[in-house]
Length: 159
Ligand SMILES: Cc1cc2nc3c(=O)[nH]c(=O)nc-3n(C[C@H](O)[C@H](O)[C@H](O)COP(=O)(O)O)c2cc1C
View 1 (tube, helix red, strand yellow):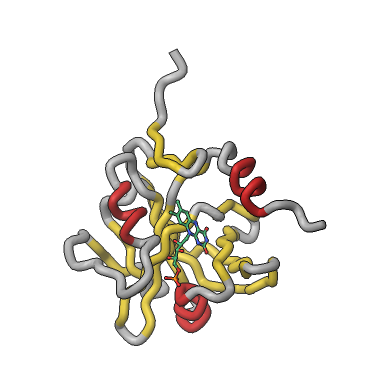
View 2: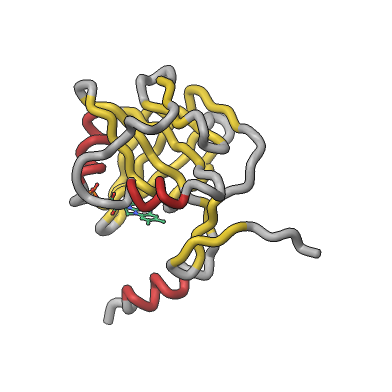
């Protein structure tokens, strides 16, 4: 019998992560999706991976664009995580933005960003794995937003 998906979520919820907004642009329309199924994959060549739900609108947007940026959210950007995890049109108007090499939108107030060209899309059950080759990126000081056990957290100093 297949392992219980609720239990998988519960267990993997103990694996605390940061939170990103993966962003792209198609025909001038900016798009963003909150994502924590993200990891650094290779340094040479510089690759990262992003798992995207196969049936999501985001999947169509990232595949069509052939590029995406990862914007790493800061501790005070929980509202952006919620915004870009909601279905429907994505709102960027109130955000300080710039455009990366690939054309993907970058959030200037994120604590870090990576601009990626999609080099491979691999199947992974009900998600696909988008492998991005890093074209550009930068970061700045600031505490991260964390996701743990289905909720948001902040880092605390370890005494
Ligand atoms: C903290 C958090 C992390 C998420 N991580 C991912 C992810 O890595 N991959 C993914 O496909 N969806 C992820 N989601 C869900 C998507 O953000 C959301 O379902 C998606 O924007 C809606 O699908 P749509 O593209 O059809 O609008 C996450 C949601 C939250 C709140």
